[in-house]
Image 1: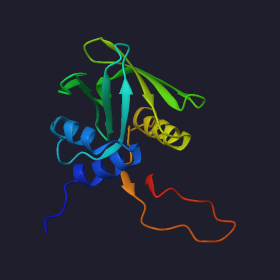
Image 2: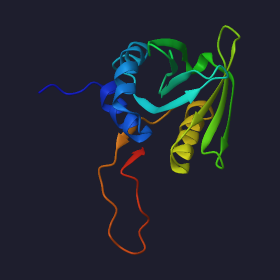
Image 3: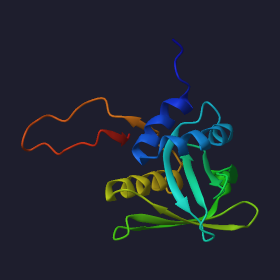
Image 4: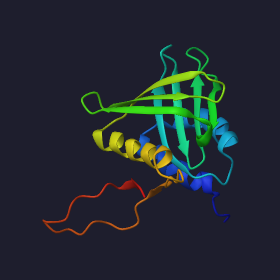
Length: 169
């Protein structure tokens, strides 16, 4: 049996964390893989919307921010944004715990300002995305950890904090 490449090893846990439907993943995976390549580790996958109200999927890797767009009627997937992290300027995001989402704004290398609303399933997912964005854009080297499955289970004691089954390592 062949081992999975880095993209596949990290993409699958990221989609599980995002709770994306299998149909959505199947439609978007080829475009996302083409943009990231086989060796880039995926940190976060999330659904997002733009001001036009189109359904998008956002993928943050160690090196890239990729957003794909899906047409409403035919569900055709197209590339909306594909940029290296260092090519993005004026990156700002605002976590909104009351609405369980993050407002993300970036300026691409061509000067176009992009704004995304990223709605997440829980506050834990929102803070995980916030941490990934901090690692990508506020650390000196822009190092971001990939998404991966947790290998150790929490001890069953009353004082131990519960751990999520999948986590951003």
